[in-house]
Image 1: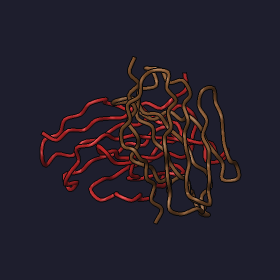
Image 2 (image 1 turned 120 degrees about the vertical axis):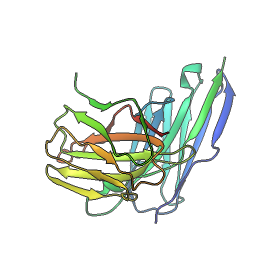
Image 3 (image 1 turned 90 degrees about the vertical axis):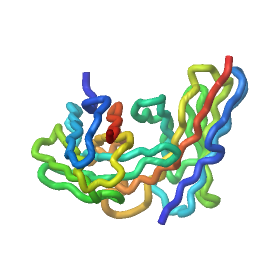
Image 4 (image 1 turned 180 degrees about the horizontal axis):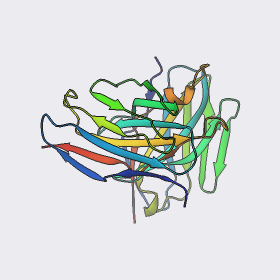
Length: 116
Length: 113
C-alpha cells in the first residue's frame, strides 16, 4: 500500500528565506504527484502538478521536483512571504487502470509559518 | 461563477443522530469525492461517484452513506454508526472524461456534542 510522508510536520521561517518542503512515497508506480495549499479551516488549492514523466514544474516563486526512482518530491518556495503561511500537502495518484484519482494518497502536510 | 459549494460550514451533532452534509457543483463534473481530514493526518477517501446513480466505497466508508441522484449533487450522511465523526469533511469534483484534476470545496467541520 502506498504511504506518503511529509517531514517536517511544522516549519517556521523568517520572511525572505526560501522554503523547502519534502514529500516521500513508498511505491514509485505513480501517475502523477500534486502539491496543494490549505489555509486554516479551508479547502485545498492546487499549486503544482507533476506528471510521472516530468522532473519538475514551476509556477512563479514555486518549483516542485520529482525523483520517482527514489520516491521523493520537493516543493521550493522562493523568497517566502507571510502570505505563504499555510499547510502544504502532497498527494500521489497511483498508476492503476480504474479511476486512479479515486485512490489518491495524501501526506499529512507541513504547516508553514512565515514570520515578518 | 463555477465552483463547488459545501454547506453548512459548521455542523453540530448529538450522539445517536444522523446528519447530512451537502456538496453541490456547477462545473458539470461527472466525478465527485468525499474526504475526511483529521488533525495531523492526510485526507482519507470515504466515498466517490463517477456517474449519476453510481458510487463506490473508499478507504473508510463504514458509518457513512451517500447518494448521487443528480450530477451536480453528492450529499454525505454521517450515521449514528460512525463512532468518531468529529472531523473536517471535504468534497471534491473533477471532469473524468477530460481527465482533469479536482476542485475542492471549502469543507464542513462536524462536531459531536
